[in-house]
Length: 71
Image (cartoon, rainbow, N blue to C red):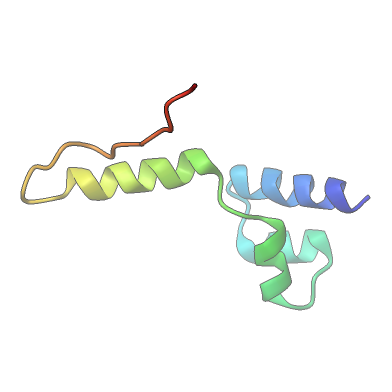
């Protein structure tokens, strides 16, 4: 049941439902708890980082993601 509540919270945030509505739908009295149940989507975080890089006056390349070599 707990995992379903997390999934619901994440889907609400992904659908851009307001924080107050998510808090009500999840039945939380504390906004701090609502924040835990509706963490940001990785794609949104990457888009925000790319947006910040696009506004860089030094014209640096877009965000670079480093991965460990396999093997």
